Image (cartoon, rainbow, N blue to C red; front, top):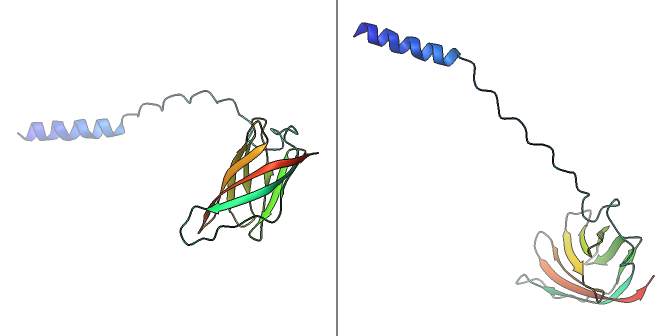
Length: 138
């Protein structure tokens, strides 16, 4: 009985000291894609002034607002003001855009073939669906 106990302990000690199998090889690095809406991945195809903006609150208790200022896209750079915030970012060649503010609010949207931009602004307390239409190409 003592011999079996010593044999069992010896096997545990040897197995604990044995080298572990090496980790599996790393997968080949995926091709790095440009960030959607970055300076390296934008277009001027949607450049223009966009107006007739309407934003509807999707959050109970948040007011519906009509954006007084328009949205401008120039050289692929998108900017608009709403609710005392400035959203900015770049549009990608497929018409997608992802904008942010310095306070961390975001706007995700897309421009359709008729140059109508629709999207959603998200902040800490309220969510808005908004739309604009292009009123002038630049």
